[in-house]
Length: 155
Image 1: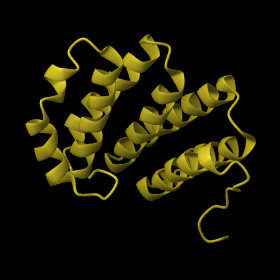
Image 2: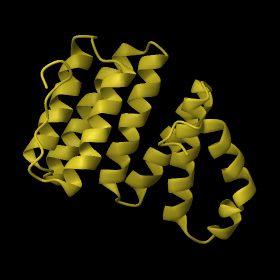
Image 3: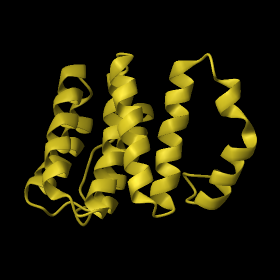
């Protein structure tokens, strides 16, 4: 539902699902739920709640040495900060996400996409749409390793 941008239904289903109780003894799944909650809040325009949920999920993933997921959550948080008009925070986070991906040794095309986003943040030209483009690319390149990143407008 979140990927289809049906945030109200996603929120309702999450509340009704009982997943928080079902995953009470599964810390990684609880972090994934917190991440999902952050995305739902962001989609519903509840930016403060989104920021809180995403920050907690990101810190939790780092605490569990799940740095790739932490970096991905960071991208969602970056989009929230752009919507909140926090360019300095967005720049710092873009740099941190890039450093994490470099440390993890992700594919060069994925790094190219994240570097492009970081540069856009440095120039205060990044938008939530650009963040979504990069996140979507990162998902696709996992399954299509020959895929090439081309910023919007040059495809």
